[in-house]
Image: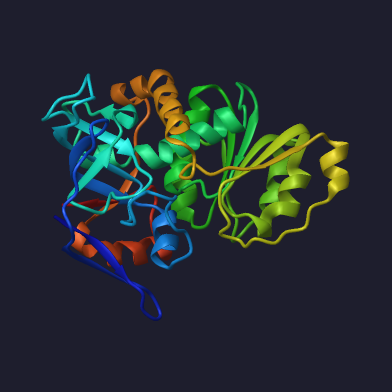
Length: 323
């Protein structure tokens, strides 16, 4: 089969679509012919040697895919060759085939394209688990969402609004600010032109939950914006690993500060997350009440160009790679 192979280089790695050894599924997996996958920030980090896959997982890039089942292990029930599916992966999506546990599969509606399917698993499950299982977001609460026009951000805005929460989103261009508003954000702030902290405090004396992929650079400001019992869930470190934490604020307001990753979790935990998401929100996606936001599509052979596009923060929503 073919897959993307990463060749370390300077100033950036080379991503080459080439022949690699064929794979097969074990008796408790299905083999899927990948039709589309997507670019995530984790892929950029892994390509630069900064985010290795969990032990035992594929070294090939790619944390999600949509495709067609081509083989079914002897111990698998409920799925058959020809089924159209999408799934979250621990790796292996940038390839012609990938082996997947059936517990991770989500069936694609007949009317959906593989591009739509590939835009769902990583960002929607990330938004879901961190808003509701880690962040305990409730109706009527205020959510401050950084990187609101990212893949996770565009999913999180819609999920939060669907349960009756109120959303303040930050973004870095007028177009991204407008995209957040179009998706339902109550307020969107251009962090390059405005102080998101000051803007937030003009609206509410404190927010209940902050979902933050920035990390160190925003830590001190985030803590000042949380109200009593507020929660900060950090899902990335785009702004560095070091930040100042005022423990007086943490103790005095009974704050919860938590880091959260999806990829290293056990198969059982990720399966439970997938099934919980399917039960609660998948029907809203199928009906069109929620929708994946797709910025652009590249071929898998153009993965390097797609990575550069995302690295430059040009996308609103997902960047998809197709066969």
